[in-house]
Structures are given as structure tokens and as C-alpha cells.
Amino acid sequence: MKITKGFPGLIKDNFPDVRIPLPGISGNLLQGENCQLVFMEFDEDFNAPPHRHKAHWGMVLEGEAEMTISGETQIYGPGEFYIVPEDAEHSARIKKGTRSIDIWFDKDYMTVAPD
Image (tube, rainbow, N blue to C red; front, top):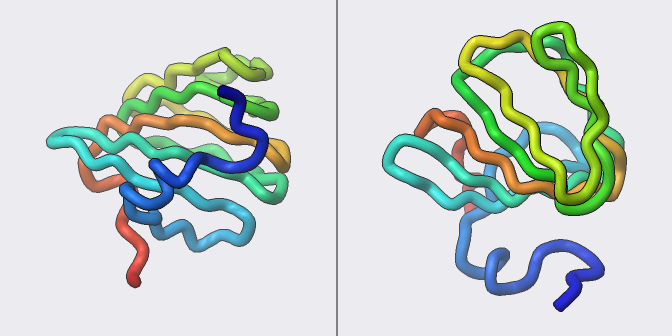
């Protein structure tokens, strides 16, 4: 099956929306005991300035993400994944239309959006 727009209802209907205070970005959260998996959608271009946090792993499903991790820049496309080690300085430029699955190895990195 090919998903042509967004994530299927199975995800949207069963995993809560995450609170992302930026326009054009949405996600659905699967909460683990020590980590969070988020199905991310970017309806607008997104630029994240350099920052640090606990380890982060992500896979691009559709679109393109340019990640600079510890000074090394690489562009990731569908089927490619990136690993941000804990406390590594990194930034991102994510193109409109990108969908990804991201795991933050921090149980409290994202919060659930209010109903």
C-alpha cells in the first residue's frame, strides 16, 4: 500500500497529537517508557537552529531533510535515516511535504496537545 497524503487513520485515530508550537508541523505520539516515537508531517518548510538534547533517531518516509550533526551536513531522502547522538549539536532544514518517523530517547521531549 502506498500512502499518498499524510498518515493513515490508524495512526491519526489512535495516537494523540503532539504539541508543536510552530505552524505547518504536526505529529502523532507513541509514548514509550523511556522514549517517544512521533509520526511527523511538515506542511511548510522548517528550519531548526543549532540545538542539543538527548539522542534522536529519524527516518524520512517522504520528502527531504538536511541535517547538520556535529558539523557534518547530509541530505536525507525517503528510506534514509539519521542518528543524532546525545548532546550533539545539530540543526535541520526540512522541506514542505516531508513525512518522517522520529524517536527521541527522552520520555518527556514532546507533550500531548490539549483536546
